[in-house]
Length: 313
Image 1 (cartoon, helix red, strand yellow):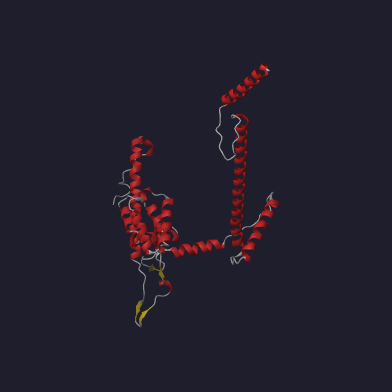
Image 2 (cartoon, one colour):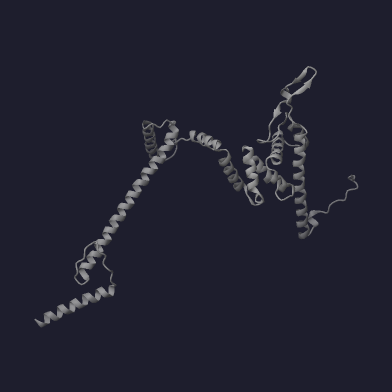
């Protein structure tokens, strides 16, 4: 290794031309990505070097490990467990918190054992390490089969996927491979539903009347056999009230349309009886609409005939 005195000083960045700056940026980015990949390898090697111990051989026979040798499961299903306090020395060496070191170990275990295709893309520098680690963290709660399905679905697309796309893919995998988890989560979220009133608002009186309506509808639901908590029933009451209002709006829309249609039909019939050749038509028969010039011509002809008749007499 060269001593510091023998190292050649790099040129000042401010002295470089634009093209040289871009080349230096590319080289630096490549070195950073290579270093991130190497850190994943080192972290995995550290985890493998500290396996979980099932039992310890002693002079009196094998005994279970104590508290200091307890097993820690960092990765998802299908990853090997590690010995207790594996992360602390690594965190000290990397000058990071134990939580960050634990996350690093968990991510590299998941990539090696649950997401091997994605790891191959990372090793080939096709996918950045931070994005691969995000996939590993997002899929950790999935079953082993679910994680492998995500790994197969990503293929060569992970480089073009953003955080939202990754989250959608993970949600799809949870629905496919862990529907019970989705149902349990929905039940937990549903139990937190509630409707409350903020009395500090200037329109609190209007809100109070609406809140009373919501509470009354919630009590009606309870009387009809709904056994959910009051807050959940109040949230359901919002849907009931909204459905009732939608029905009223639809009825009003239909009524308005019927009145408008009847008015238009009456006006059309009136024009037909007054001006179109004196013919009486039923309101159910559509009357052709004549141009204004034709109506005026008909009126003028009748006026001329009336004037000629008066002159003859």
